[in-house]
Amino acid sequence: MANEAKPCPCDIGDRMEYGELGQEFQIEHIKAYVVKPSAGSDKAIIVIQDIFGWQLPNTRYMADMLATNGYIAICPDFYVGKEPWSPSSDWSKFQEWLQDKKPTNINKEVDAVLKFLKERCGAKHIGAVGFCWGGVATHYLALQYPEVKAGVSVYGIIREREDKYELKSPTLFIFAENDSVIPLDQVSALEANLKEKCKVDYQVKIFPGQTHGFVHRKREDINPADTPYIQEARKDMLNWLNKYM
Image (cartoon, rainbow, N blue to C red):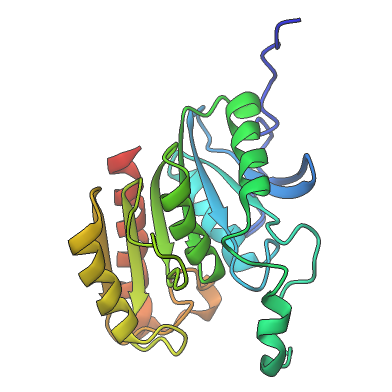
């Protein structure tokens, strides 16, 4: 029996609450926050969470922003129901917490999301944007999934793979100058190795004076002095996606 075209569950009436313009759906074994643009679109972005999980308002706000710019945006629970990190958690236990939440061990979830976007939402052009943990995951997708046509990795680097510079899709890497998680020498090494080994378009950009988390900071948490850098980074993100999708 031929597969019937199914209406995209993204076709929902927008709710105008801040940060909650979409709805949650069950997609095979994972849940996801899905938000649609006001007009129909065949372009979709996988928005990948940071360590604080798929329900963090900051990340959902970025999904909403992408939808207002014409993309179907989907923010899946890549931890598959496991507890996200908490600001009150003991950092000495972070590596233990991370053991079953590796950002390079997400193929099953990515495959389910890609199938959903293609079959249920009619997506023909798919990209990825990720923050922190999700930035590492976005870097991973650029190595493993050429069908993901563009990526924006925000404060995230794969450190352990031998092939980490052999990108298959154009990728923008955004970093903060004063990031306590990613020292600038690691950023410099990434850029130097990409220049030598990468065969697709890429860009590495460092934002002066900024700290980890600046791009997906909520409006009410933004220091006015940081606003121009945050706006510039978000514009760079959109320009990159628009160019390659």
